[in-house]
Length: 359
Ligand code: TXA
Ligand code: MG
Image 1 (cartoon, helix red, strand yellow):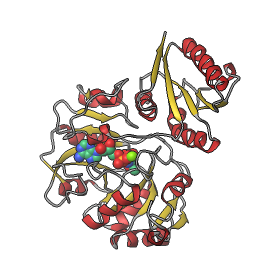
Image 2 (cartoon, rainbow, N blue to C red):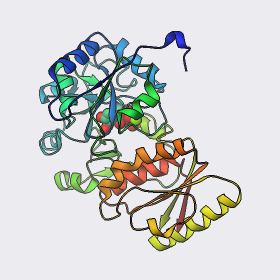
Image 3 (cartoon, rainbow, N blue to C red):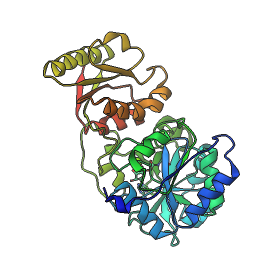
Image 4 (cartoon, helix red, strand yellow):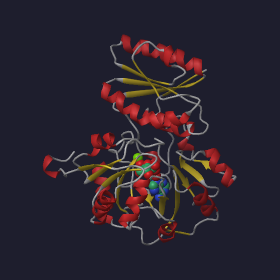
């Protein structure tokens, strides 16, 4: 971290998530226009925003987050006309996807136009674009009269922020403003879909599911690293985000996957062993298994029948385990359909691919 002399004065403003106050949005937009950094809510996670067309401002994002300069940033827009300025050579299905999923948690990777600074795209000739579905985000982009580059508003490598409190933990003193509109509704990030690839390829599973994309596209691929159960080599050129360390709590973490009852047995056994070794244990359970553990700090992500709740709670619970000071988090795997694909991707990566399969 930089010394205290480099600290910024960070203002925190509560904003109404349904009817964002005009003066507060105008104030935030002025900061964006002046090249500053504003954290704001989206429907997925909080983003750390800067003017996407101002290279100096975008450089500030990388610095504040301590993000590797080769990891490109998603550009957020509030109207489709922005897309045609930022991207070119749109494939035929781009239009269908925008109609079906925007505003919403789908990010499209397209060929970048010449107005996009290379620092925004991490040096690539492609650009990732999305139109968020959150009134505060849309109002801020509109008032700023420029597309807003925004990665998740966490220190690089940490779990993404789903509440303003998480942004404060990571970035207070490093950015200009935090707009606090309460917890986000989806809780995992957008799906990143590469449209420069034919058929389109999911680089990161997220809020829009593989099943939903298949209905529109017919054929969709998933990047092998996005569903890998262990670390796989990644070619940098197309999917830089896949190779960086991510979502990691401070504690060590293990994910146990497989048959539900076998998962519970294995976690009971591991919890006992770790406790015997003097470790403080956290168990990331589900509503259906909650009553079957006795040892350690036990938290539920939500019901296996409703993975939306699990997605919404996941990052918050990882941060809570850190606050509890646990040495090891043992997490239950969930089925990989629907949002389960995004949840398992985050869990495995948070655990550094420390995965145990049981049957
Ligand atoms: O839901 C979200 O997407 C949130 C909110 C704030 O919108 N944003 C977010 O940004 O998660 P970030 O920077 O944490 O993740 C962006 C991902 C990274 O994996 C990055 O590598 C990938 O998108 N990405 C960005 N531009 C890309 C490009 N041109 N080609 C391939 N991948 C790209
Ligand atoms: Mg991120």
